[in-house]
Image 1: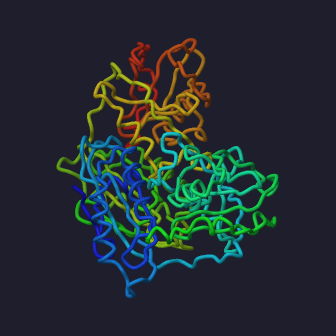
Image 2: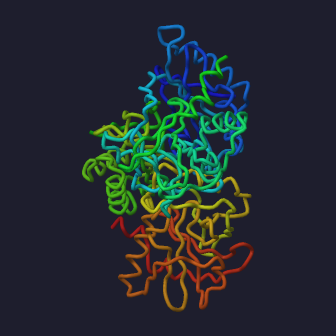
Image 3: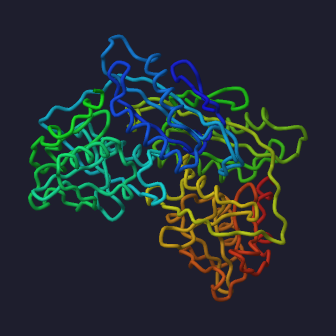
Length: 272
Length: 272
């Protein structure tokens, strides 16, 4: 059984393993009124990744709580945009790091306004100096262990919309809050799901759209100099709240901005 | 200013960044009555590592809170042993991962009984299959991002006292809750502070004791087969609550148990 906490009116047990060890996951969901954009993608990922961590939770239970939370937290207008965050932790108990044989997971829900969405002209990005390491057994999981992203985010100067993190060898992995998708004359290239820290649902949805459109997708690592990729048509940042964002300037180098991906893939269509 | 939360009677804001991102640190301190074993080591590390994360806190403030917590939480007997845990988070606020320019850190204190301390005959250890990755910029810091240790701890079968974690290439790094120290005919060997996930205060104190005793210490990586190290005299697990623990069986292979380190180094002496 899930213990549900509404962050606007309730607090969390100081013994919760989410706080003690980051023993949990989260989803940040774009909402239109009481409808969740990419609802099934978010819930599928949350259930699958909870399974990888051994946190016992069911799709139907989470879907039910999402519906209840959407109704309760939805701000004023019936179709207005906002953001719903769901944190799922293993709950309390256990001996130190060792989890209890079974526990009641905690679900913490909160609402926040939709942030400003960048326009089609594209954004400025830069590489963070703080490196990103990926444990192969935790790759792709949006866990609560996000101190690397926090530390990289301290490098924001106000001039960039996103900071891109590289692995210790200098290869780009992902943005602090976005996945990378590169379009070249030959293919769409994105780092593999087992090589990224967070495999976002927008990344997943974009790959499904590209596949349905008959495009060629290659999951492989990106070179340190994305701007020098032969036949580069565009670099996209993917995030389920912000959608598809083109990069027009990367480390002060201009990149082509084509906007193709947004015409192939519109997450707001998942509401239909 | 520190916001102090007593875990036995108070809850934590659901917006705390310690919960959201593991944006914080912790110390687990062995207590004798109201006295903290390795008090200065714990406080020094906490202040230094908070500085590395950009969490603004002062030694005197933490020492004061430790004194207050020791008085308030100390169980029955005046000189009885127990464990005091201090979690220090960056507090609330910020835009997503990006921390606020300044924040009031949260200090969460809790007490627990002293666990059973292994005897000089040594313990059984085994390698965990779950790998440990170390971000070079977070190396050594006892942050709240401890999901790797949690996942490794799920492999405990009840037969081992500790599980040792290796990096993705298979080299031993540390135990789930202990640092490694190997004694050979030539030297004392321990992985370097910039190569471990947590650089424990017991590791630090043991190195100080060995240095004071004129022993040779080498900070370098350990081989996958510690049992095959030439001139092996013993493998020790170091933890500030458990102290110095000899390994007598590692992955079913017997290791020599000498007990020398405990004669050179007694953390309870730091109470004098």
